[in-house]
Structure formats: structure tokens, C-alpha cells
Image (cartoon, rainbow over all chains, first blue to last red; front, side, top):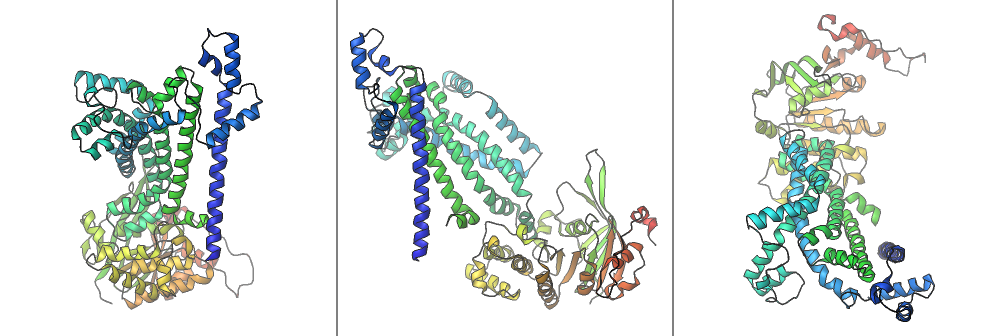
Length: 345
Length: 287
């Protein structure tokens, strides 16, 4: 019993150390990026009309005169205290900006991922089951288009037809002006907030706004998830335990879903986590096109205004999300794969 | 033994598409029958079509294989006319099959107990969960597994090959099939447990009065467990013998195989090399 607790705590210790080292590496990386990019943060604040005196004062205020390692130490200790610095543009702490913008991204990419999973996994399974038949060709064609067509082009085309021409969905933004400010912000997600408040009109308006960008992200994640599901299922369906299941008299559905997919699900966890990560980070283009007040939009506009604290803070958050998703998929591996479970404990 | 055959196969052909658009004939006109309670051995080298012939019987040929036969019957049921659904009902219930290596033939992410219980669940969906579990444990006992309750909760990678193969036997004998095909059931196992696993299988088959088709490349082993032996070469049956009359084999291929068996009394001279003649692959080439 004690031995078991010891191995558990050792395991947890090793895990925590891995996370700490990864996050530290992330901090080093963002710090280095901040120094390497040809942007003068002092100039960004004072503007190019300021006198040398003012420039010098701000230069010292920002700690730029100190050696690099001291600057790095100040940066890391700030991060540890939740201080990501001030945004020059919004004049607010970067952290509170990020907390405001992140939920919108999370909402959009979560719905996108759900669409990608709900459609992508069955599509991949069907393609593998009917290998080299029409469902396979169809899924491969859909995935190929998803891989090749630029997201901004598809986004603009979608807006042009579905919003401008047909008026089936609402345009850019999260809500129509008419509905803004009705629902109190509690979770950061307008869909959840309005549902909680029982404001269904607001809810459906938000829905009509989110559906197009979410479908767009969902399509790209479908292309990836579907393709990977297909190749993993092809691998599993050729295994001998699949023949065993058929010999037992199991139905084709049981064979494919109960046996083969149950095995393919193990590597799929990583695929889905990676896809989620890239949706959270890669929604920059989609958020820009749809004026979605998310972290991608925030990052892009900060970058255009040379607001380095905001850019680095956003990068750090995206990186941390990736680390977290990787940890989560590692943990799920243990749940799904009895062989991995043994290695871990 | 009744006179009505349990399995009746006539002029079975199985072919695979070749790269150049032609067909490669893997099984070329195989005919055999099996009486109820009879034990039939099929011997031959890899690629001789011995596994394919029995997989055709169970309806689990690879998808791209093309099959034709004059007759393919199981207990009077015409398998050529049966729908996929009817054939699925037969599988696991009235006929089943043991595969070569439990390392690959058991599902790695499902507990052993669950995989055995699945066989019962498919056959008897009305059984309660507890009753299904009890029967699965009984089955594990029947294949001489000690502490079956514990083994029920193990995963395939946690048990040995011999135990895995006994689990496989338990799973495939669960619904008391009338025909069991064992495709090289001991080739992947340690020599020390081979006899034990085979005896357990033999015991179950004999006690339940099932017919057995034992596929192997091991002539000696097959002649020990079976009543009758078919020798296959290049997709054809070249010889059919009673197991106790192996020494009367007439076909040069069978005689060659027999001559290659090492024995304790042998002088230690090099074993003879198996000679093959192209003519054996043709029907006219049969003596």
C-alpha cells in the first residue's frame, strides 16, 4: 500500500517536473522571441516624435538597461505572479485582456472540434470499412479539399453566399448590435450565458453568428481527423483479433466499432488533442475574417501595433494550452490502453 | 458416426487478383468431407491452401478473394446459397475456429473475461450479466485454468501464450459448436505447452461430440490427434490417408515429408531434402 503510494507520488512528481520544464522552456522561447523581433518596444510606447530624454526614461523604466539575464529573471518572476505586463494599446494588464478574449476562442474552437469529431470519426471509419469503394473516395476527396483550400478564401466565400446572398446566417461578430449587453457575462461564453439566463432570442442570435466560423473550423478539423481515423482504422481492420470477432459471430457493427475502433481510439486521442490545439491557436485567420473577439484576433491586432507584451502573453497562453492538451491526451492514453497503464504505474 | 457428412466440400476454388490483372489460384479444386465427430487433419506447407479452404467454410475469406465450388455444405445447409446473416449466425454458434497466435488473435484492449462473455452474449442475448460471467468462468475451468476468477480480469498481454490459446479455445467452444477448425493452434506456442493445449482441445471436442479439422504443417502431430489426414500441395489435395496408415502413403510428396521426420533411432546422417516436382501441381500428376 505504502509502496503503491510511493510509486504514485513518484509518478506524479515526475509528471509535475515534466510540466515545469516544458513551461520554463516556453517562457525562454517567448522571451527570446521578444528580444529577437525587430520591434523597439520603447519606440512603440513613446512614438517616433518623442525627445531623447523621454525615450531614455522609458528605456530605463522598462528595464532595458539591465543585463539580459536580469531581464529574463524579472520576466519569469512576473509570469509566476500572473503579471504578463501591460498592453500598450489597451493600457490594461495583458492577463485581463487574455481572460476577456480567450473564452470566445474557446467557445468557437470547441464547437469546431465537436463538429470535426462527430463528422470526422464516422467518416474515417466508413472510409476504412469501405476501403477503395465510393465512401472511401468521397471522404478522401472531402479531406483533400480541406487540406488544400485556404481557410480565409473558404471563409470569405461562405460569408458572401450564406450571409450576403442568401442571408441564412448572421455576419461577422458574436452578436447583432441589438442583442448586445442584454446578457450578463458570467462564463465568457455567450451561448452558455444566454442559455443560463433563459434569453433564448439572444442564444439563437449568437448561434446564427457562431455557426459559420464554427463550421469552417469544423471542416478543417474534420479533414484532419477523418483522414487520420481512416488510416488508423485500416491498420486495425487488418489485425487478427478482428477475424476472431467475426469468427465469434459478432455483427459487422460490433466488429468495427466494438473491436477495431476501440483500438484505433488510442492513437486518435492524440490526434484529436492536436487538432484542438491547432484550432485554438490557428483560428487567427478565421477570427480575423469574422471579427471574432478571440485570442487570435487579439494576437493579430497586437502584432500589427507592435504591442509585444500582448503578443508574448498570447503566445504563452497558446503554448500553455498545447502543453495542457498533451498532458490530457497522455492521461487518456492510460485510461484507454491497458498496456500503457502498466508502464505508467 | 452417422453416414451423413457434417461438412461436404466439392471442387472448391479460391483465387486472388494478381497485379497484372489475372487471377492467382490458391485453392484449385479441393473436395473433402467430414463426418460428425470425425477428426480430420490437413497437412501442407505454407501457401498450399489449407487455411483458405477452411476459412471458406466459415465464410471469413479475405474480401478480395474469389471463391467458387460445386458444393459447400454444412450439416445439409447449402453455404453457397446462405445469406451473410445466416452464415454469421452459424459462426461461433455451430462452427468456430481457433487461430494460430493468441498474441494477435485476442483483442489487446479488452479483458479476457469480457471477450469470452462476448461469445455468450452473441449466442444467448437473454442471459443475465451474472449468468454470462458464471458461464465464462466455467469455460475457463474447462480449459484447466486455475483461479479463473482472477484470469477473467486480466488483459491478453498479462497472460502467457499457452494460457492465451486456452482462452481462445474457451471462447470458441463456449457455444458448443458442432465443428471446430483449429488453424495451426500450437505453432506459436512453446514446445512444452503444445501437447497440453492440444489435449485440452481434444478433450473438449471429444466430450461434446464435435467434428474437428486440425490444420498443421506437423505431420506427426496431426496423425496423432486425427482419424484421417489430407495432404495438400499447391492448392490441391494430393493424398488422403487414415491416420494409422501413414506408412502406406503413396504420393512422393507425402513420402518425402515422412522421410524428413527425424527420429531418435536415426543414425545421424543428414535428413533427406524434400524434393518437389512441377508435375505434382497438375491433376494428371497425381499417382
